[in-house]
Image (cartoon, rainbow, N blue to C red; front, top):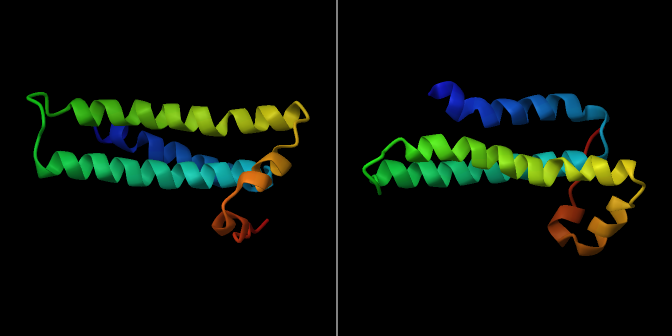
Length: 108
């Protein structure tokens, strides 16, 4: 069970380790997904620890990892595909990015 619960975090650590040469937009997407997965799982598991909502106590621990993988797939995978297709992703995202995100600097 521990492997199942920790697997999304292991994938995100691995993606962070191999993404040093990837585009800034892709790395930013990985960072945001890491933050979303960490906060989301923390909220779900904390809610479950506060009190089980269902008779099937393991349901939360079974469903959260696939949902985390789905979030990773929906956000991270399309960005390199758009870059390879020649779509100017940076200009699309910069126009709609919040000011706090624009202030972030990514080290190479």
